[in-house]
Image (cartoon, rainbow, N blue to C red; front, top):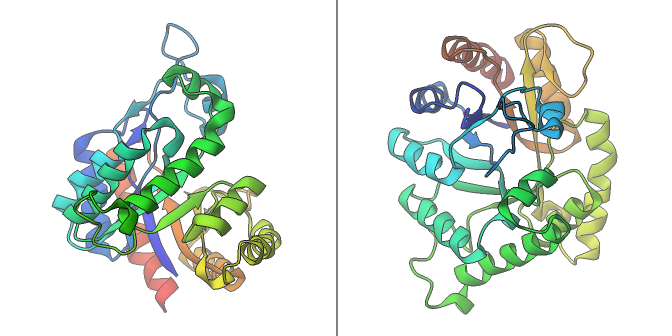
Length: 295
């Protein structure tokens, strides 16, 4: 199992250069596989006092406006201050971008990082964000598919004038985010991995055969599409089966369950209300949990 961690590039208070860099450097030193950025372009406030848009607040618990650093720019910065970790988006909202610009930025990052980019992409879910950007929400699936096709074409022989080509051939790995049937079909048809967030082991066990069936319909071997997932780390006891919790041994057991059902990569959201607490939790996970997982 390969394990990566998120950096707080989208956060109420922790989206600061020093914190983002500190998390990435520590993850690199502790032996994590990768570091990951979230993505939003605009999270409209619900009122003049800066309160978060209700749908966003309900999903993430943040009540105030979010500080946002654009993910590919953050990862380009982190490429220069880390040595070996892979650099991923979990996930990049393709329908909100120009397909050509997104392809140019992704390929540039892949080259400048010596082939460390993992491009996790998704169609998005926050309708008010699409309204703020001026992109029709109901067109997000089509726009996502078109952007993926554009990226692949530009990286291949058809995009002969699109230079340089990416270090990773035929293109940086494409992880398809989302838990919907449309996301499963997109992953089977066009992805190198399926990347849902916050699913229980039982939910993954039920949905992975559906992914394999979609691969068969798309004429692809099932093993061409890896299964990855993202989970929050919660240090306090909870009955939520969608999070990582308990001591190092308990978390290692959950990781083993995820691996048993077919998950090959796990992205962990490390908690913290301050930079110090965030780094303390990251250090604990790296020194205790990674050791337990590899035992």
